[in-house]
Length: 451
Image (cartoon, rainbow, N blue to C red; front, side):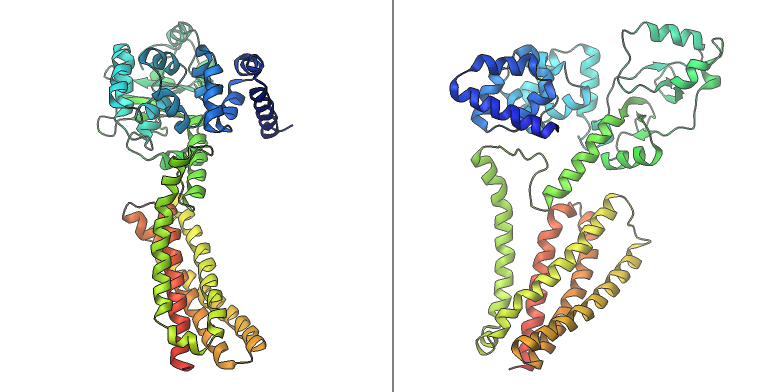
């Protein structure tokens, strides 16, 4: 049985128990019968009122573990209502990088209280993480590194490791640093295990290794891990080259998943942290912005149509065929836009190949335009028995598909240079362009040749 089916079954059981008032059964499920991941899924799958009741039934000692697995938006909702003591207890379950992401969204007074209650070492680490944006390598890294000096022997390195009760997760190598914490190289555990106990670390460590600088973007980090098949990588200060922390593959998997969700939801103008069961007003405000933007673009297209009202009054068939032109342009443009956005995300598109890509898309647009113009023209003749209208719609299809190819290629590149997310704004602008150009071409040609 899939985890999704199990979650739905548990959700139904909890819902039935809430209706009958059997809170003891629910408390049992939430505090031991179900793993923390399943409890988190239950919270995410519950409407606000039920979610609050479920959260209150979770024992305080278990809340921190559950919060690790819910979305950031839901974590913040719960943590904002906690006092400092409970917040500190909950935060112990988070990795430093995840906690830093959440603290950046909490009120400043609460953040100061949390930092003040930490030890000097933990506070310094957390402040270092908070100084970087959450979508950078510095915001993604964790500070749980195990470092050694280059002048010690393998035997001493083993003794040092045995002092630890456990190693940090995803530890595949030890990080070699100087006394000033300047990064020197790595010592893979696989090499450490078979090395001569009397050998010096400097003689067996690897200096030619992949490093990440704190100001690199999370997307660049994900690409490096994918390209080099890394499990972990050190993060350095870009100026001093001092070791700041490390990034592990589990964090990179989260980045890849978040980017995929971001691309999908951005096409609809939604936030990638969108809560499926968010309160009504919160959801309404988020969607209202994009509905307003869409209204402006719709009025723009309607204004263009209004310019040719006399033409539409005289040739009614144009009103019937007009949506075909806009639809064909919209689909063709979306195909190009999606391809280019993907290429930008993978760092495959730059100044050296953008011109070639543009030329190819224009040629493809022209070929498809000629092909489908012929098909649509033939169908128009069969439908209306008018060759002139057929010629007009064929010409409009060719023009609109060429503009769709041009806009779909250049628009995301231009938005990226302006610092605007192409996935978020690209589709709205593209739709406006293909609608306006399609209507303008179709009705303009009709005015010239039919009236």
